[in-house]
Image (cartoon, rainbow, N blue to C red):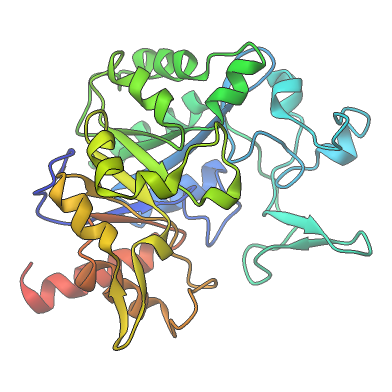
Length: 329
């Protein structure tokens, strides 16, 4: 079943982005269980650290976008007004209620980023540790007779290091304890920071994925992603990583005849790099794309990607199953 990191893998993989996050709050254990039941090949874990150095599964280094930290610990914001996970012990993190990603409008009213997803304030969810997330997936693999991969992102490693924390060592320690440190067909490690991946290459046999952002985002470390997407840049990436995780607009674009692959695909193939773009969302389609299967076709048929991060693993899995039944591949 497992493609590992061979660029010649037979089938594209479905990567459940933060779990089945189109249906449940991102990174809650329920979202991971649903993604598992939907047959995702890999389930993603974004990891940050707590003050007591515990790796927890959370997309952001701060807490207010997806938890009720402002209501429970209103006096714990830093001078920038943000509530950082690194300023809380695990015991305090466990007191928080996890919810659908939200923001406050100009009137101060809390709004969901995706209004048609799981309702804000409904049911009870919590922030899991990385170890708990892995144990759930491993347990479901045993009870369901499956083998599901982990796709772990090291969040803001340079920022953590500047605060005196080594997020890479903390994650590797959990993988060793959990029995996943030597499963290169079942674990990917991904990061936006190239220097972190270069260091990891000397510390682990697990395949590495270089995430590629946009320079305007100001990612941790200030990596030049424009330069990274050139032939020279990808040659360097291929010296330490097995693949790239580009933003979908870096993979497909509008051309004279409609959607077409960008030059990045051919360059990645030249350097034998896997391509796992992010993020496919039924409720946030790129400009010029009318429906989710049009986006599926562009990614899998036109661009020929090796997998995709999706908020809707059931829809992506169904598309690939339909393609196999139609084409025999």
